[in-house]
Length: 140
Image (cartoon, rainbow, N blue to C red; front, side, top):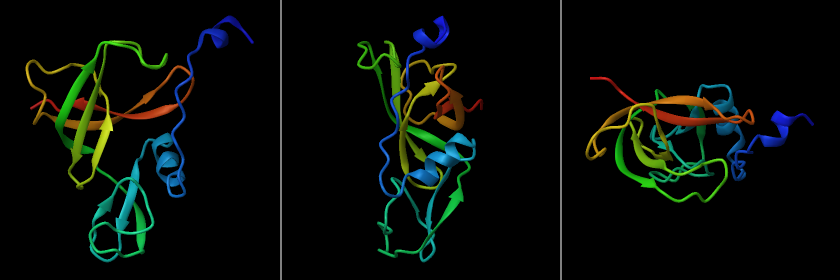
């Protein structure tokens, strides 16, 4: 192990349920997919066996556009995990496709309240090689 490997902080791995692997594979490939119901066309997140709208068990993995709007946000001033030193932000994003994702806002931060700000999905390489879905402000 060299000195760089010894100091690299590991990103906490995702908790992998029965339906999560295809989504995380698509994130790693930088083309995020979510389950889309074959009966009513609703997107579902988190991935699962049935549609929350119509209870259909039929779905297909569909690439999302990644656009959305910040519905809630917070800035943490205390570190809880070494991979996320304080201060860091957490945002709740309502995707154009419907589901709500919890993530982080990268790049320029809005002044004042962030609620209602338009964002776009982007992918971040963590120092340990993990790829995470994050968001950036949409310039209007």
